[in-house]
Image 1 (cartoon, rainbow, N blue to C red):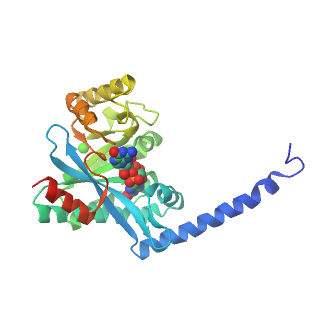
Image 2: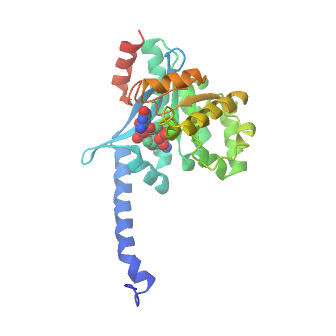
Image 3: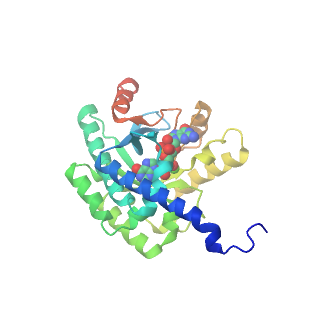
Length: 278
Ligand code: C2E
Ligand code: CA
Ligand code: CA
Ligand code: CA
């Protein structure tokens, strides 16, 4: 082989050095981004499938980088997670999201809910439950209007700790949803033992629901199972009207996707409410 004679260190060290240098750079840039207030929350409407009525929004973070432009979360959330910066960034997200929901209440008179993504490291941080409690208190937000989205993978990772945190959040009155449902190694038993309120059907199932019988059957089954467990269902990634008809026929409670609106800045979201819901 090509690398015969070279030690593992010689073969991989230069590359690793580069990678870790790049990582350090991004880490310090992320840290600065937080200090310089370069993060921004975008909001994507969540509507009631049957009526089309707006019920709330999901908060999705963006990074307005002076050098890179608008950076999407997939590009920096994993790094923030690895470096631990997700803890202060996630706290910022929760505060901003609660502030936004309480402003919407004032400016539109609607009781809109706000869904926030929570990453595993943030969820396990000992201060997490207090961060949520503080944000809700400071904004005088009805806790049932805050929905925390937790991925299936996190739930299956670490049971005792996870169960305890979920119980404390549930007691506080915030709502809990399973994000990307169906993509993990679903051990469905957690659904009956944990206090979840909502399942978010992953967009990979929703995408082909009209053209793939298998996907249609899966989504149908997920909706029925969720309902028999007393959970509500949100379909994400809804892009076409035909999908909304299918979801309505299957009794899916809520829907979210480009068909209704792309994620929008705070100002554009409020404008969207004015034009679509008045
Ligand atoms: P997610 O939680 O599954 O969020 C849904 C993603 O699907 C968003 O991508 C959204 O823009 C996109 N999307 C919405 N409607 C459609 C549609 O009709 N079709 C398609 N193809 N896509 C649609 P985005 O904003 O790039 O976020 C990517 C991921 O980054 C999120 O996936 C979430 O896991 C993570 N993320 C976003 N904001 C935060 C945050 O504040 N904290 C944490 N921890 N993670 C976040
Ligand atoms: Ca989500
Ligand atoms: Ca609950
Ligand atoms: Ca999702």
